[in-house]
Length: 214
Image (cartoon, rainbow, N blue to C red; front, side, top):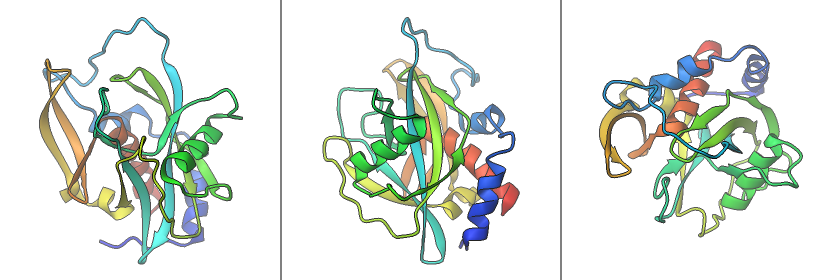
């Protein structure tokens, strides 16, 4: 499935992101469920930390692509998972858009200093790690060359927007999290990788918007 794009499309997307967003309704379509409930909550004593991620769009092969990263194996809740580049807010960041751009450049080595920031999606609280995540959408007019930080990224995977639009790439699987919770996890199958959890929820809101303006 191809997805042709020109700058008029990017302009339409920018304008759409200024309007009310689909929000939780779109996010929760891809939310994992526990015992049939999608709104189960984990309890944290700490206040959620702020972070940002980036959907970095670029054109290649008559399609619209974006990079995903695979986290290395480590002793943490997101070990080995596929996600969007990004991370926590630091004191020197001007705002959370700046956080998304900085973290992306640090993690995958792409120069985003001249990226066109299109807008932001709805903030999402990530239950597993107690982060409030702001998804930022930006566009670069070149094909990126990746230089991943080995401490942060084990692999970079290029997804196509058309992958998100293809219903055959929407699947579901039972997972065991924290060695005690059995959950049903909807996911996007992108390049034979399982993209689930908060990343799938963010991408589903993005996909909902793309369908509106396509």
